[in-house]
Every structure is written in C-alpha cells, then in structure tokens.
Length: 486
Image 1 (cartoon, one colour):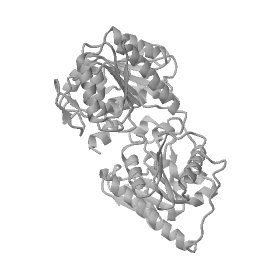
Image 2 (image 1 turned 60 degrees about the horizontal axis):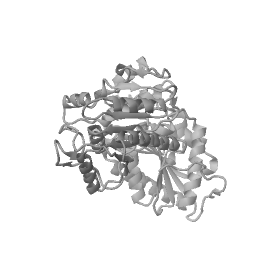
Image 3 (image 1 turned 45 degrees about the vertical axis):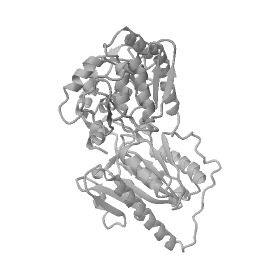
Image 4 (image 1 turned 90 degrees about the vertical axis):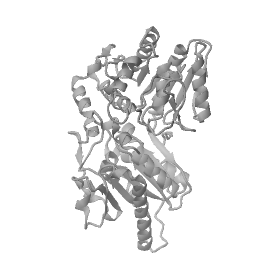
C-alpha cells in the first residue's frame, strides 16, 4: 500500500478538529457554510443538510459547465429525502486540483474525512460509506476517482452520461494505468469487483462520448450496473442514488462483517477487529494472508460497528454469535482473536467478557499496534492519533489475559507501546520495523500471527495429552441472528 493511501485519512485532521468546534447547521433544513466543514480541495462546496439525522451523505459533482439548475433540483430532491448533499461545482474543483503541489492529488481522502464529520455532526447513529455521484464530466471524475479508492472507503459510485474526459490533471495518486483518449484520457479500472458498487446511467440525452466512455469501461472488464433510460439521465440518477442509500441503510442493520472462507488446515478460525479506519489495508491484507494459508477469517469493521458507543459485554455477545455461526459453518474449533490499533485496544476487555467455554477455545490473542487506552466509540480524537476523554485503560484487562495466549506486536518507532512491559511475563512480544503501520509489511505480520498460532496449537496439544479435545458448544441457539455483511 502506497504511503499516500495509508496516510490520506489523517491529512488535514487538525483542520477537521477545528471545524468540529464550529459545528454544522444540523436539523435546520438549511445548509452549512463551507467553512463549517473541513472539505479540503472541496472547500467552497455548499453542504445541504436535511431535517434531523442524515440517512447518508452524497457528494454530487456537476457537469463541465458548472453547477446549474439540473444539479440544484437533484440536490434539493436528495436533501428532501433525508440525505446530506455536498454540492460540488466542477470548474471550481478543477482549479483547486491543478493548484496542488507535490507528487499527486489524493482526492478521495477529502471525501472520506468530511463524510465522517458530517455523519457525526448530524447525529447519525450508524455510519455508511458516502455516495459519490457525478453528471457528465463529473461522472467521468467519479470513474477516475474509483481508480484511487481503497476498499471500504465509499459506499457507492454513480456516473450519469459520463464524459470521455473531465480535464483531469496528470498528478492523480493511483497506480492504475492511464488510457489514451480525448483530452487527458482516463484511468483504467480493475477487472472484476471494484472498491465500491458502480452504477452508470445512460439517458436518451447522452452525448456520443458517453457511449465511448462506457465502451472503454466494458473493455476493462470492470463489474458495474448499467441503467439505460429513454428520458433524462438526471432523473434516473436521482432514483439510483435513492436506491444506493436504501441499500446502505439496510446494510447498517447487520453486523458489518467480511467473511473470508477457506478449507481449514489448522482447526481454527480467526476474528479480526479492524482499526478505526475500517476494513481495509492492514486488516484486510492480514485476513487475506491467513485465508490463503488455511485459516478462515471473519473481519469486524470497527469504523461501522463502533460508530455508536459499545460496551465490552455487548461486543463479547456479538463475538460469541459470530463464533457460533462460523465455527459451525466451517467446522473449526479453536479461535484466534486479532485486533489492530482501535481493535487491539478493545480486545483485552472483550476477552474477559466472553463466556468461559468460549474463552477456553481462544488459543491466541494477537494485539497489533496496541495503545495504553481503549476507545469504545469512533471519535475525531482517535483519527488524530489520541484517545478520547471516555477512553478506558487497558492495563488491568491486559494483565488478566492468560500470558501464554498473548501476542503483542509493535513497531520500533512506537515509543509508548504497552508491549515491551510484557517481556518476561510469558507473553509473546514482537518488535518489527517501522511505526504504527509496521512499514507496510503486512504479509510478514500475518506470518508472525500464523507462526504464533502453530506454536500454540503444538503447545496446547502436548499439555492436553496430545489427544484431548476441548468441548465444542452446540451451535443451536448460538447462531448469529444477524445476516453477515459481505
């Protein structure tokens, strides 16, 4: 993972904290001034807010001619249906992008950061990824933005009558190849599944270059939904945005899980609780590496699960349901609990709150990037790298963990990690290169987790006489009643 992708969320967060102090005009049915939200390069956009908590946030990019009556009408419709809408005039936005200094522009970071702020300030009790939509040249921008978007960053992308070119600068942060075409061309999207569901709307009013842009999309093999209408693309775009928001609303009624099945070769499944950035980067890579080596994984997206405050007992109940469902599904007995950063902080108390029979089945607790305090709700201070006033110390719960199960991993540049204090306690303490992101070597990190599991399985087998089997709780009555997310 490139450094610009790992650090994009934290860029400008000091400004976000200041913006939070100003607040938004939530519940007034009006608009927040652009200065009220840390929009980064989107600064100057109008933020239209609904009455009460927003059901989601839509970033709407105008066509090449700028914000006009079509965009105004669509934004008003969406705000009236309960969405917050960030109204982006494309010519103004392009001028700001062209003024960017440095190697490249990482556009999606402004959307990710400000969508968190808008959801928090409008009182949303769950967080769904933002919807990004554009008309004409704005639709072409949305397609190119997908080429630099990590997984679990935006909820849906929509492009109506996308143009062949949006006047993009050459310095867009992405590893995707640039395809030749009109103007600056476009960035190719990967074949198969995209970082977010994509819908392309082609209206009867679509110009010829829209058909050419969609043909290029088809040739790249990307998976997307194509909607054709004989009427105006704007009207259909509004309906498709409403449908995307409804799907995101529905997904928030379920546990935000990612299931990575495989044929088990270690009689163990892993549960990975992500950092506060959500299910991406380190968490997703480690899970994929474990899956490829015979350990099926369920990932819990901390950004969405802990958007509202949780308790250790509530989280332990959900972990119990997850294990009950998936251990029965995959035919595994032992459990590895893995947490990164925010997820590592909550694991010691969650382990203590698990039912005794399930604690007996946990063979390893891997704490990656652990801090001295744990938050139980996603906060702006957490994005700034500090804990909130409501954070709880982890020392007591960490000391109560069975030392032989603990694997504590920290980067040599992390100067205030609790891990070194565990030396000599019987816990496995691992120091790696780098800091909180372990120099991006997530594969090596996954191998250390797997090495620990294999070592502990051998140790436990010898201690149990080589043939003892711990009791497996019946899945009856313990199957997770939530439908797992994908």
